[in-house]
Every structure is written in C-alpha cells, then in structure tokens.
Image 1 (cartoon, one colour):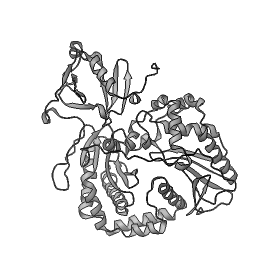
Image 2 (tube, rainbow, N blue to C red):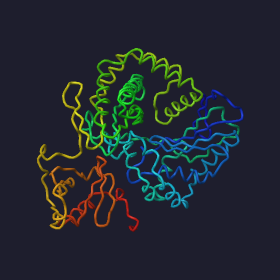
Image 3 (cartoon, rainbow, N blue to C red):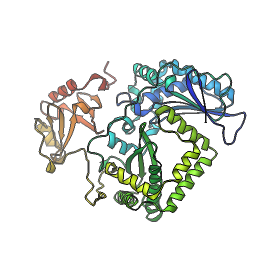
Image 4 (tube, helix red, strand yellow):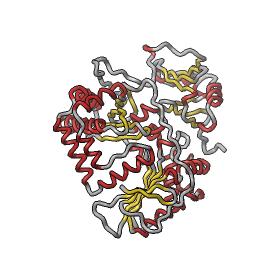
Length: 496
C-alpha cells in the first residue's frame, strides 16, 4: 500500500493484479453518508452527489457514484488523462454546486426508491436506533428530495465535502498532473447514534417481510467475522437447502463508530414461514454460541477469505480497508496479517464472542409473527414492542382527549382511540387501551398535514395527531407545535 497526497487530500494506491498500463481506476470518497444526516435533511447527500454528476457531465469512460450509509464515492475507470480530467471536474463541482438545478435534480431522484432503502439490514438498525444514524435508512422515500433546500445543501457540503474529509484510492500510481482542488475543511467528528433503551436482548415486530438478527462487534474482531459467516452458512443449509422456506441468508455490516460494527444476518422467508425462519435463525445462533463451530467450518471460512484476497479485485478490498481506516480510524491490516488473524480463530473464540454479544442482540420479525424464543439461560426472550399493552401497564395520567361522537359512531370498536396530553409529551391510546408515547424530546420530525400533524417518533413510528378527530384537538396540536423546535418541522409546499 503506497501513500501520498495531492492538494492536501490523502492518496492511497496499490498496483492492480492484472495491470493495464493504459487504464486506471480511481475512487474519490468522502467520509459522509446517510449516517450523518438527520430526519429533516434526509436525502441531502444524495442530492449533492447528483448535482456533482450533472456538473461533471457525461464521459466516455465508466463512472459510478454511490451514496452509502458511511461514505460517498465518485469512481471512474479510464486512461490516466481521463481520470485526471474526471477528478478535476468532480472537485470543481463540489466547490461550486449548480444549485440552479436543485429542483430538476430532486424531481429526477424522486422517480425511484433510494437504493440504500433496499438493505434488509435497515429494519433492525431502525429498531436499535430509531430514526438516527444508520437507522435513517428505513425512513427514506422518493418524496424526501423535494424538501431539500439550497441552504441545506450548502451547509452539508461545506461541513462534509472537504479536502480534510476526502480520500483518493487508485489501482496504480497517481497520474502526472493530478490535482484535487477541493474546498478547505477538517475531517468532521462523527457522533455515534445512541441505542434505544430496552431493545437489546429482545425480539421485536417491525413492518417488514424479512427476519433479521443484529449484534454488535468490535471494528477489528476476527472471531466476529468468522461467527457471522459460519452462522450464515448453517442457517442457509437448514432454511434454504433442507426445508426450502427462505432464500439465502444475506450478511451486512454497518460502521457505528470507529470501534464498533453492527452486523446483520437477514432471511427472506416464504409466505407463512416467517415464524419457522425466526426459530431456525435464533436456535442456530444459540447452538453456535454454546458448541462453537467445527474445525472444518473454520477451515472453510479461512479458505473463503484467502480466495477473496487472491481474486483479481482483491487489491480493491485492501484499498477499501485502508480508505475506511483513513476516514473513520478503523484499524487497518494488510492482506497477510488479515489472513493470519483469521486463520488463528478458534472455536472457543467464536463461542466467547457470541456469548458476549447475545445479551444485547436484536431479532426483528414481521407483524403477525409470534415466535416462542428462549434466552441462553432458558428464559423467554422478551419482546420490546414500542406499544405498551393495557394488561401489563397502568394507564398514563394526563388530560384525556376523546374522539368526537361522529368519529366514535363511524369507527369500529378496536379503532376507537384517544390521546393523553402530559407535561412530557402526547400518548396515543388505541381502542384496546394499549399506549404509544410521543415524547417531545425524542421527536425526530413533524410533517404538517392540513390541520393535523404526522410525527416521526423516537422509535421510528409515524404517529398521527388530527384535531378534528377528538374534542378540543386543537389544544393537542398547539402543545405539539410549542414543544417541537422549528428545524424539526418539515414545511408543506404551501408553507413559506
């Protein structure tokens, strides 16, 4: 791995495994992504990337622009001259974004669902963090771009798209005349999202069609990598190979901070088999935690790592690890050290890792799925639903706002609800007297909807407060408006 700089930007390069002296691949990345947005600014990084693409223009060589959870990259493959020209154009566009194209760009982006929303790891991340950090991936929708203003774009670009937050990776020596004239600015400090209390060590219903297990590991922990891959293969053999109830398990990992990763294993079960898939996933995890992997499983794991490192694109895996180390302070290991560390993992290492992280793991399942799961101690694995069941909790005290007579007459009994106004927030109470909190200090976003409000709560649920449905409902909306800071209110198109 070679290291240099250009205009104050760190440049990392290594020769390609199949070098072509006339071609070069370059990836200019910025250490920012969805994780650095908030609910009101969600989509701003994608808008900036699209504006840069529009300014850089169409090119004869391959260009790929990605916005991920942790970073944003602009990659191209071409001759040294084409690469130099492409990088210069990207830097110019970042320095002077074409904000006159903001409306057009937002409309075009809104045609399709955001790519990162397809990550099946989004649901457990949302369960873990709510609408913050990587939990924001679930909140994306095609309409979010229309709310992005020029001021949001300027502020985000000035803070995140700077030379101090950029790294250039190349699969060959830097070309002659390389310049990276980016705006000045330091690498911003990233604040890790706080896990929601009471979620670790539970299972939870979420509005999804998958079954996912999330657990955390240290950023550099070979036993965690081995555990994740061995577990995925074991689950595959049962759910896909033997029973035919789910597609192949998908493994994701997400950087939470410089020392912590969230690892997610996800299954997409066939209709009617979500409960069975959840049992297999959880039971397989407990079995691996108690008995550990067989040596042949660890040998298979090590052989797979060696195959990846020896592949034609293996040098890019090493480059990407080095880029993450530059952006986020994640420990970096060269290929030889990495393979040696993975080969040294023992069954006891895997057992120790899983036994450490299982008490904080989160399993998410679709609604109407009720798995009967046990902890490693044999006690029932608790559910962490964000609704409080009436039979298990006393009713919240406060000012009650009941439905209007017309609303009660036209609603089914189980749909009839009420609101409770308290000093700390509003409680939604459904027809079964189960409750959901809207805590003022945890609200992530408020969207006006005529006289009513749609509230994105701290758990990631969308809750509705409509004054015409309850007596004196305008008092509820007034209390909500008074408690929520203006920057958390997304204006409607008719609002100045």
